[in-house]
Amino acid sequence: MHHRSSCLITGASGLVGQSITQHFAAMTAAKDIHLILTASSSSRLNDSKDLPHTNRHRISTIACEILDENQWPYLFKSVQEKVGCPDLIIHAAGAFRWAPAHEFEFAEYSRLLKVNLEFPIALNQFFLPDMIQRNSGCLIHFGSIASVQSYPGGAAYCGSKFGLRGYCQSLFEDVREYNIKVCSILPGQISQREGTEAADKHAIELNDILKTIDFILSVGGSSCPTEIILQPQSSYYEKALRKSLTPLKS
Ligand SMILES: NC(=O)c1ccc[n+]([C@@H]2O[C@H](COP(=O)([O-])OP(=O)(O)OC[C@H]3O[C@@H](n4cnc5c(N)ncnc54)[C@H](OP(=O)(O)O)[C@@H]3O)[C@@H](O)[C@H]2O)c1
Image (cartoon, rainbow, N blue to C red; front, side, top):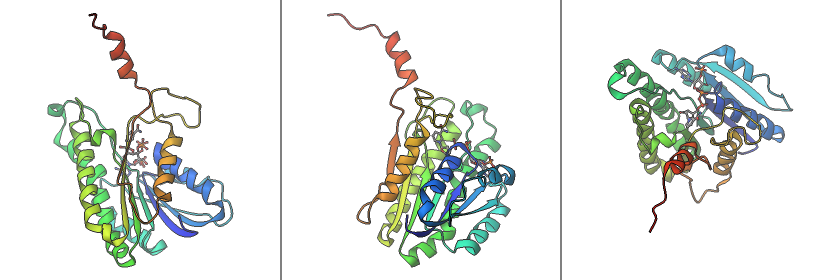
């Protein structure tokens, strides 16, 4: 990130969003970065404000319930009033639900599609004209391993995350000549416990998510890491499966 820049983080009250916020707060001690945090609840967002306020670090919070489309313009315009067009948008808002496809209420499909797919598109649409005119920008989207692999019970989630991946791939083709980076991080299960060594042996540590973001931000102007799949190094399911397999004897 530049010395003077702005970053909008959606889902900033969640596991990943909070961690990214704290990371930026810590790493930007020497930089003048305006962080704008959004999530549905202002109370949870305000918890994020209890960050170390080192020097020129600035944080704004704007609550927006994504399921209420009428609140979107307020969010977009408020961000614009605060920083103009953000240099970096991190899409970390997400909704998850697991059930057999035929048992999902259609409203549940709509909910996941709205949060995981429609909202990121609308947010990008609002700021892309300015990014194009400015000839710079970086959009980081949180997809999932469920953006590339389907599984039983994942119809709504996989549908929304596969869709987001397709959208991002196409968007990159359309804006790459304008020096806009369009990146997707596609993680498997992320550990819920922050900072504990090997907190959960079969999940990705949050610190690795942060390193992935640092990597994306460190890449120069000649390339764009469009998709990064992060698998947990060790898989509980794989191990269980291997145990149940009897080796073939010749
Ligand atoms: N955790 C994992 O293992 C994992 C694995 C792969 C991919 N991912 C993806 O990574 C991203 C972050 O995941 P996470 O674990 O941080 O999720 P999380 O802890 O459940 O947080 C979700 C965030 O999204 C916001 N959000 C959800 N519904 C919203 C709505 N209707 N309106 C406004 N904000 C809403 C939440 O805000 P409120 O609290 O205010 O509702 C919260 O800040 C998601 O896209 C997820 O699909 C996560």
